[in-house]
Amino acid sequence: MKVTIVGAGNVGATCADVISYRGIASEVVLLDIKEGFAEGKAMDIMQCATNTGFNTKVIGVTNDYSKTANSDVVVITSGIPRKPGMTREELIGINAGIVKTVAENILVHSPNTIVVVVSNPMDTMTYLALKSTGLPKNRIIGMGGALDSSRFRYYLSQALDKPSNDVSAMVIGGHGDTTMIPLTRLASYNGIPVSEFLSQEALEKVAASTMVGGATLTGLLGTSAWYAPGASVAYLVDSILNDQKKMIACSVFLEGEYGQNDICIGVPCIIGKNGVEQIVDITLNDAEKALFAKSADAVRNMNADLKSVLA
Ligand SMILES: NC(=O)c1ccc[n+]([C@@H]2O[C@H](COP(=O)([O-])OP(=O)(O)OC[C@H]3O[C@@H](n4cnc5c(N)ncnc54)[C@H](O)[C@@H]3O)[C@@H](O)[C@H]2O)c1
Ligand SMILES: O=C(O)C[C@H](O)C(=O)O
Image 1 (cartoon, rainbow, N blue to C red):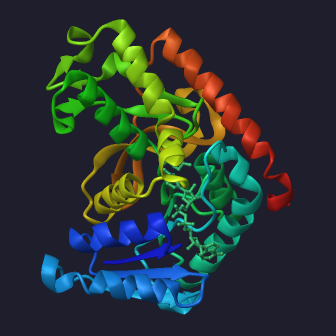
Image 2 (image 1 turned 135 degrees about the horizontal axis):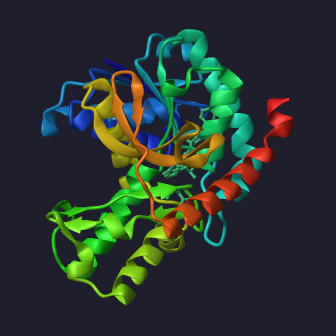
């Protein structure tokens, strides 16, 4: 199975590294616009093969889309990341043009591929990729919820002082500092509601930390995070390539689900070889429904800024 990752920067290269190390794909193509950069990243990753024992073939190319031909999955991480103090939404001006061009180039050589959009503002970039390429909605998947949910599980595990893998929890809504919706009511520690162990105040603190999880790391690192983002993309790609049918929160095009239309936003999805195989339309309570509607309004407002790019 072949995966192309466009953007060999922090997230793209980490994703290539995790995919190779875990043997998720037989071939990974890293593509970047910076001369020699993807080639260097690919060579560095390939020189891990004998010490970590993987057989994936990783190649790097400078803007040569012919080498991406017949990819089963293409991941778009090209674009600029935010700096401390910025929101993801502020990246739209530069990233929209990049994502649109990249999505079009990809499809020339891989018309049947499934596209995973990572570049920010991710929900809006996913909508842009869908609208500009006209691909069926099951083949355009925005990655954000997998990452936000892993951060939610991390913060819950810290509050519980128990392992993250014993915690089950999901974040839906937009992938933004104010639009994420950590589903605290449904979070559990080994099947037991977390409210059995944590006070309302502690749970609110966990939800708040989750929502600004990306901003916290950006403040600490000076640029946005990459280890958990790269691993989250690899997790999603694994579910596609190996038809795992995992339920993962992804930004997908809604047509009536969750009371929304004509928007890409995070909801639970079954992810398999056909991409988005099912949108899981769970029953939210009134407070959660109100948060989802507010989140969708904010995402829709951002989409309105795409008019000139989509014209
Ligand atoms: N959705 C998420 O959960 C999530 C998580 C982390 C980062 N991100 C976003 O992913 C993007 C990448 O983040 P990063 O930390 O890897 O940034 P980075 O700067 O390390 O890497 C971006 C790479 O894209 C390349 N690039 C730019 N224009 C290109 C083009 N037209 N074609 C090919 N390559 C091009 C750059 O040369 C650079 O190497 C940012 O927009 C960031 O906000 C999203
Ligand atoms: O925070 C960012 O800007 C990058 C990414 O969306 C993240 O959540 O880590």
